[in-house]
Length: 190
Image 1 (cartoon, one colour):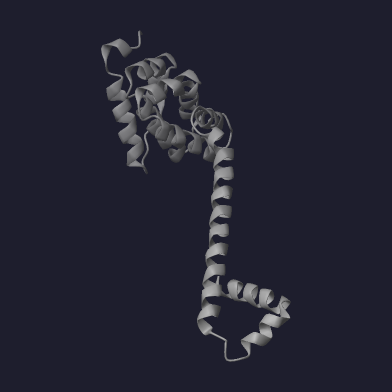
Image 2 (spheres, rainbow, N blue to C red):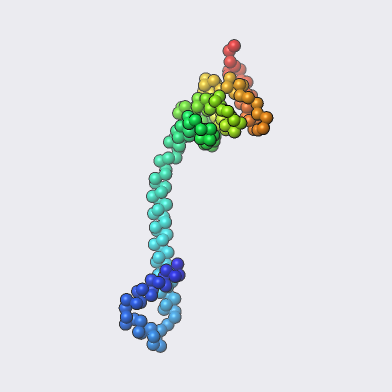
């Protein structure tokens, strides 16, 4: 910043030739030069701060529409992709969104519960199963969402999920979901 200010001062002083000659005499004061540098540095600093604040505001304005419901919808859309990595990313996002009953029901309304059940049924590896079970466990904390999971066929898919030899978390989520659905209102008629 100091170099920019000094270059600015030398450019300004060079344009006024009379000013350069007067500095060569005894009236030259180093304090004036330092004050000029500090003043230029302060003005340029404020300009850079305003430029940064304006850029941050413009970027924030562009990204805020992607927050909230739209981001939930995109996360559910990721569950429909064939690549297991994207499915895991979508399930992980939905797990983070499912923090209260209102958001859990919003996920159910946009089709997230059914897509998570489909993802769990089609999962071929433990990591994908773990993310699906984790998201289903997060959704099942709400009674209404648990009912929607029951109607989506989650119980039979969870029971048919193969046991994991490598990942204990898969078993933990699976057993917690099965305990959650042991309630008599979720019994599957034979």
